[in-house]
Image (cartoon, rainbow over all chains, first blue to last red; front, top):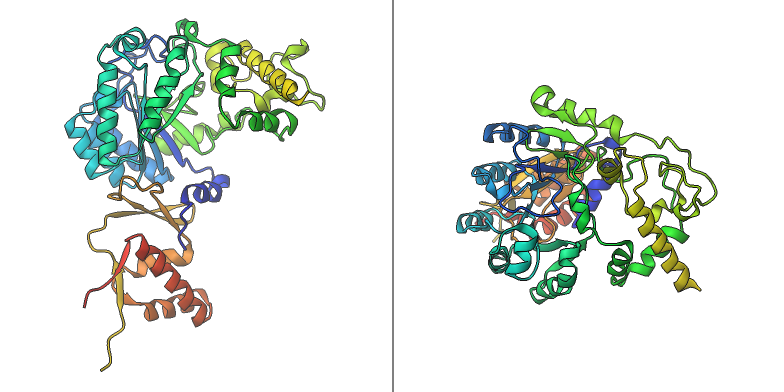
Length: 360
Length: 100
C-alpha cells in the first residue's frame, strides 16, 4: 500500500497523464552575487516580480494541477524578504521542496525555519575554495567563509545538503578541493560544465567555458564514464523524433519571477503569463513545445558531427544519445531549439574517440 | 479477563498533507526528520481507503471488514492487507495504537 520508492513510482504512474509533477520557481532574478558566468545577468530588473499573495495563489493552483516536487531558486531566492512566507505556504500545501542557494544569506531565522519545516534538501552552489576565487567569480569576497559556515550549520541540523559548482575556467583548478570539502562532510558534489549565453543574448559567460578536451577529462574522472559512453554510442537507444527528451513541458516546468511558465530554466522559447491565463492554461500552452518533433527525419546510418555531412539540426545525428546538448542550450546559443551547437558537437566527437581508444 | 482489541488512529500531532495526484493518494509529512531521504508515501486505492477510514480510530478487524466489503476481496486477504498497511505506516510513525 505504501512504497519507499515513492518518487520513482509516482513519476512512472503519472508519466502518461501529463501532470506537472516537477516544478522550478524562480522567486527573483535579483542576486547579491555578480557571477561572471551567470546567464541571468541583465535580467534583474526586467520583470515585475510576483507579490507574496500572487505566489501563494500560484502555488495553490500548482497543487491542484498535481505538482509535488518544487525547486525554489532565483537569482538568490533568500533575497526575497517574504521567502519564509512563500516557503511555509509551499510546505503547507504538501510540496516536497528543494531550495537552491549560494548560501550567503542563510541566517539564524532561515535555519530556524528549516529546522521546524525541513526542506527535502538544500542545493548549494560553490564558487571556489577561498576568498580570492570567490571575489573573481562572484565579486563577493566573503562568499567562501559564509558558504562553509552555512554548510556546517545545515549539516549540524541534519538537513540534507548537496554541493555543486559550475565547471568553468576560473574554478577548474579548485574542483578537486571542492570535492574534498564535500567528502569530508559526507556530502555529494557535482561539477557541471554547462555554461550558456545570457538570456539577453550576451555571450560573455562562454569565455569561462571549458574546452572540449577539458570537459572530457572532467567526465572521464567519473568511474561510470566508460559505462555511460558504451550506453550512449554502442547501444544507441531509440530516441524517437521528439526534440525534448527530458520532462520539460511534459511533467516539468519553470516559472520565472513574473510568473511566466516556460519549459525549463533555459528553454524559454514559449513563455506564457500566469497573470494573464492562470496556471492550468499556462501549463497547457507548453504542450505544443514539449511535443515538438524534429524537422529532420532520423536516418538509419550514423551521421556523426565530425563527418561533415551533418545537417543543421540535431534530429538526424545518431550521436545525439551521447551528446550533452539539449533544446534549451540550442535555444540560448543558436537561437533555435533544434540547431546544433558546435561546442557540444566537439565534446561528443571527443567522447566517441575516447570510446574507440578504449575499445581498440 | 477479556481485553478490548487495539484501536488504531493517525498518529496524534503528526502533520501530514494528503494529496491526490494522478489517481493516487500521497502523504507528505511536513515535519518529518530532515535526514529522511524519502519524503513522500504513495498509497494505492486500498491504502487510501484505509487512511481515510483512520480519520476516526478503528480496530484492524473493523478496517479489514470494510476493505473486504469495499473491494470485494476475501476477509483473510483484507486482514493481511490491513495488517501490512498498519505495520508499514506504524513503522513510519504515521499511525499508532490508541493508548488505553
